[in-house]
Image 1 (cartoon, rainbow, N blue to C red):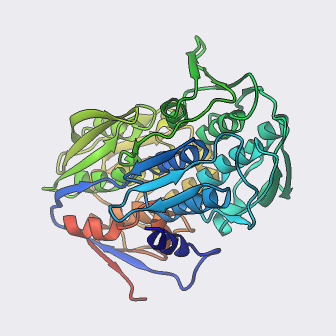
Image 2: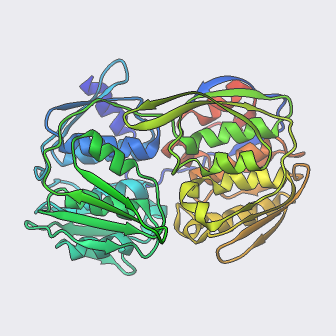
Length: 463
């Protein structure tokens, strides 16, 4: 209902809330049960945006109701789309048509969401309106020039803080130009921002990525009726071409579970002896499945069952069994785009494995919600693990047993750092404390309840 939607949106605060919410994770016995992965965050963002541009009413089942996605829903309302949630948890978006966005009356606060901010900047760049974007302290530190540069080539104008950072203003073009753009670094967010801006441009826009990145935008654009061509080139690069000025038509979207979120109960089940956990409805897009490929190489007992497809996305159920020893592996840089968000939780598995796990090509981790590479290395060392941190590499020297633990981890406003070390606390000798669990709500509301329901021993400090 409309009132319920307004209540959900009202939970989003403009800036970081205080006080902090500490969390303690203690050693667990066998984890048992079946859970459903929360909706994929990347797909949820895109469903709201494209539904807001489509003609007619789009019904979205399984939308992730985390803070990041709710901020995107509020932004689409500010752009003129109708966004509401019914009593059954289905979200309904009535779109304004390609080129029909209205100028927002207020500043768009994207909280902690780099995906939401960068993709919406792409939408706004193709409309002759002015939008103002801000976010929390973490988002305001993160680089936006990688997005503003190609969008400026298409005709948009930006005013930013020094270093191309938020808060920023974007005035879109009344005559956006199609471009051919070679990404200097593989980035699904930059690719997607360009494709979204290209919806209002005449002709064809092509983005060339040095190596394939997650293709949720391409899949969903096709699902709504756009023409998107993909060419894999001999040098390993991929060219994605969008035919501009389509008429997008409303479509039902069933959001699969987020493999980045499923990673946490999966790794927990692998590490806690005697565990057997089924994780239902996990998105199995091959460009997002690098973590599970790596875990299988490490010797993990993971079965992929009930393979199917939803809204153009492959989906599976995962059956994960613990107790089987893991061994260290080398994770090549070429795999990084398919698992860039999963390296923190992989590092926890590596700390418990036998032998060295070498992770390469991690420069992008430096500019996530926090410097994730540095945060993981510092946190593991504080817990007693042996690690080597390089500018773009992380080596974890596994000792075939969990590290001692006992540390207090600074989450740095980063949900994945908080959840990763909460998982490590389930197997470490001494409890692991997280200074602030509140950022977890950006991507995985219900994380603590889900894990405790499986048998974890995670306690949040009383408010």
